[in-house]
Length: 116
Image 1 (cartoon, rainbow, N blue to C red):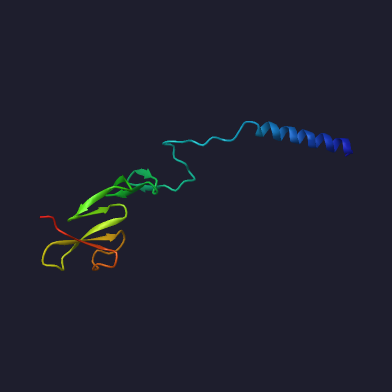
Image 2 (image 1 turned 135 degrees about the horizontal axis):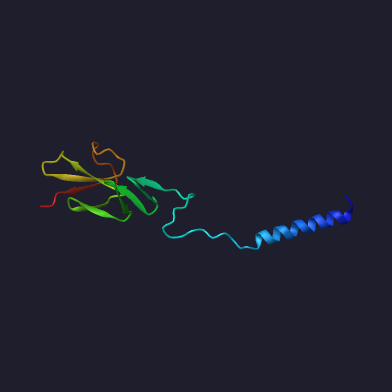
């Protein structure tokens, strides 16, 4: 090929590339659209974003949801309420989710008395 052909081929390539790229940046869906690249978990038949919700008792709930545990309040997505029967009165222990309730209180656990 002659130098003029190379220049013509490069010019044509640059023209095609500029036409293809001139349509703007791709727009990603927002709102309720499920993004395939985001991590989602499943709760029953529903998907949820684990950075905003958790699955509790087969329901999708916000991470900030709390419940009573005796006289304490615990965050149901991060903690669990465990009955603790080693005391004469009914008491509970709030533990980090995933810890076995059969173990006694660990440092960081909260001992809660029953509400009378």
